[in-house]
Image 1 (cartoon, rainbow, N blue to C red):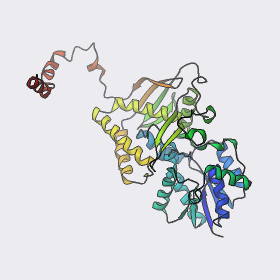
Image 2 (image 1 turned 120 degrees about the vertical axis):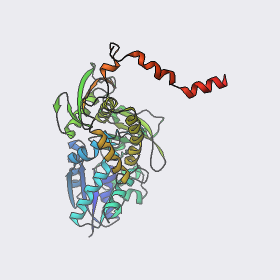
Image 3 (image 1 turned 90 degrees about the vertical axis):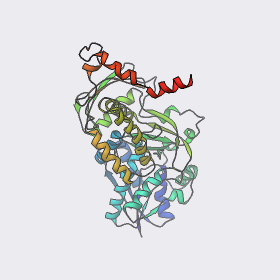
Image 4 (image 1 turned 45 degrees about the vertical axis):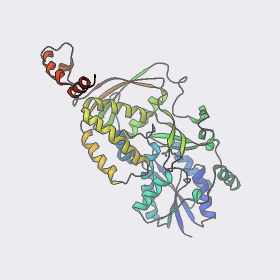
Length: 391
Ligand code: ARG
């Protein structure tokens, strides 16, 4: 029998896909769970589910460091946020696709499969990378059979697939965030039930005393929290804990999907919210006014490319090159106060600071204030002529 590699999480969609691929497509299924920093239990769960439904072979692929160092780091440097969403799922998809291609080549399979529906963005993200970087045939059973989530649940029950109670929501998790969709959340009229949130405390349950933390950056990348240096992946995990316990990073938005549909989306992105806020705060100190305008212009462009399944587009690489060049100067420390869902920047410092304390100070006498008079006389000269002509 021909073999297929299926990108597998152990959730409803991908578990149902195993049986569909066997039954309707006559394939032996190799499942692959790519570890991009989702909780360890999820990796275990995927393995157990794969074993319990008797897949041909199962792989867990550790891509945590790569995800942090080659994808999230770029997201931080670009302040990549789409309509309020720090692109946690979107940044991981290209890497997952690349890892699946490597495995498919190694296993000599005929096709690659994924469990995405025909409504979301992830199908674009997987398939555009697979098509650009390999010649594998792509199978998308849920989309091809036009299945609803209830049909999937019925199919799972009739095929002895265990359904976990959380399965009512469609959740995607990695170290950069947790995306929650489906069930009552779909309708923007409904409030998000408390049980949907796992990473971020409610305002009521958040720490009752403010927490002050420092974050150090080197070339735009956070390298230490509270003076403790650590790898990016560990730092993000720590940032998730600290921000989550202070109620920071719940995002509830109406998102414009690639297919044109508006969708109510909910995210838990505590670490991403904190780190991007701190990063942007430091940029304010080291970049010129024009540089800041430029980054505010390119950041949405960058975010759109990531969101719109165009990680492999040359413009993304071009932008990364200029961003990296600028980020050489994003070095220094930001101190922040975290309290009940709010982040306040308390202080920032950098050896590349463009702020001149001598010149701005109210106490400075050396820079003669009177010299500014000439500049003021000529300021708004055209506006002044216009006003005189018309009044
Ligand atoms: N809307 C988000 C995006 O397009 C998240 C998708 C998450 N997928 C999921 N199965 N819940 O990036």
